Length: 93
Image 1 (tube, one colour):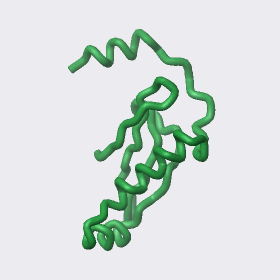
Image 2 (cartoon, helix red, strand yellow; image 1 turned 135 degrees about the vertical axis):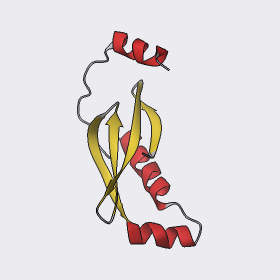
Image 3 (tube, one colour; image 1 turned 180 degrees about the vertical axis):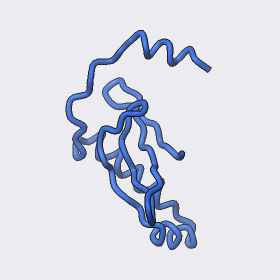
């Protein structure tokens, strides 16, 4: 699965790209937990963009990231960080 990681409020989040009927949905996620819906790219749009050298999924992911970082897309209160689990995950291959 394609994803675009970024940091927000000392957390590692990602824009996860999920295949759906006739397109892809972009979700802001932390680990495997979906936090907010970021948008959708239709297959027809993506193909039209690809034909002229554009990556519309990546462009939309950058828009979603910008919206999170500027507060335009609210994630709501994030749960506390489990430091021990974070350290273990970082050590795992």
